[in-house]
Amino acid sequence: MKIATFNINGIKARLPALTAWLDEARPDVALLQEIKSVDEAFPHEPFEERGYAVATHGQKGFNGVAILSRLPLEDVTRGLPGDPADEQARWIEATVIGRRAVRLACLYLPNGNPAPGPKYDYKLAWMDRLRTHAEALRGTEEPVVLAGDYNVIPQDVDAARPEAWREDALALPASRAAFRRLLHAGWTDALRLHLPGPGVYTFWDYQAGAHARNDGIRIDHLLLSPQAADLLQGAGVDAEVRAGDKPSDHVPVWIELDA
Image (cartoon, rainbow, N blue to C red; front, side, top):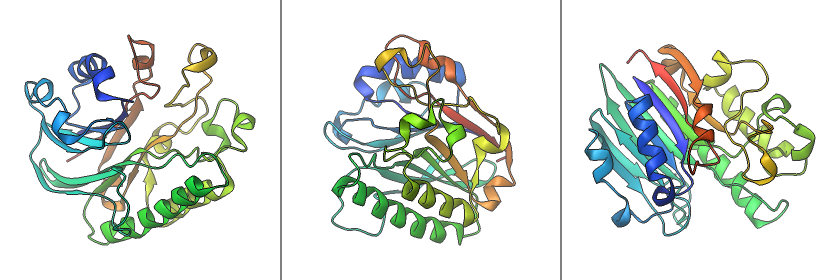
């Protein structure tokens, strides 16, 4: 089972790039962030023509997450538990049925800038809710994958120029500590397990020729429960997508599970 996560930075602007990547990479499941579309306006047809079922949790102009699956989808739920007043569309989860069932969560974690401030407070509170819900999911003892744009640079090795991010919400000590608490609770960073060295990035800013200089950061992650980690066969980054026509500033990150 090939599962990919991809912050597409707007479904309307990236539709040709997204469908071209789907035709080339052929993931069984694609988890999308920043679709920037309400559910009613999301373009189902190009994906359904390719054999994908579509589940969305959209929001006008901002945020929004979606699941595309060539395998049966069951028990789709929307919104991260823990704050009924939170109206931002940042979480969707579902069970995907292959040779065995895998619970998938697609997340778009808040950026948090400027920090300090209310946006950073929201980021940290959201990460606390994530950790609580992740524990509940892990407690099911089923394979679970938490994938998406975490807006966290876990370590200095995950940035080409770590000094440039010292004061940014993506790399502040509290952000990194919240991410580490997830790992310490038993979740496996799939990409780091397979690509432990430097130079592994998933995002390059549009400004100042960042991609041409490989001035990137790694903020898109797939975290695996112990049961999912036992099924892991491979992981990678489709970095070449960033050089395509009208690309997102993120690229797809994927794993292969024996599922």
